[in-house]
Length: 260
Image (cartoon, rainbow, N blue to C red; front, top):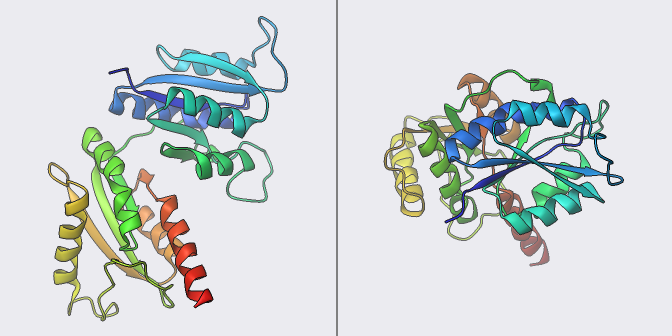
């Protein structure tokens, strides 16, 4: 088998270098080689590479730089299709001023990449990173459960704790068939929480082996984004893993419900 690869798209800006500490740790955890990928407007002449790329190459042992010309997201997806990386690690955005949480390049890569994408906030800078706590928001649907195995595998390799969080919304969307519903007394967890938590873990374990993993479950109520961020702060989370298929599944269910 070929050595796994972690792809690191860098646009030459200093902000993009925030992805390096995260990529380096993930490379060690996955025993993967690191490949820096830079997309330019034109093919640079010898010695014309942005200084930040040389800095990145020196910061990552045994890494290599691949160059391409074209539209960034399209070129990133193209090389990812060719080399089939274990992960893509990149910043959420690199522009000094932004209007959205995700830049257009990161958004396109997340939506279309066949492999997991790790997004790093550029404001974290170059401080060291560690992987000890992985938070997985889980809505109880089969779609989300099916995406758990690579997250659990990463946590297992890193010796990290896996935190499963279910947030019950005040006005939940129509459920996906086969979903594990929230207990009726979410405001009084002592009534159903222990039994629900045990059954939830059993169902997850049927799809995703949890042996040799330290797993904790959390049940919250309210706005999902706010509760997930609260839990991430309280539990000193290093990585939040979320399935894009979860949101796609909700949109499909909503469209089906609206049409009936």
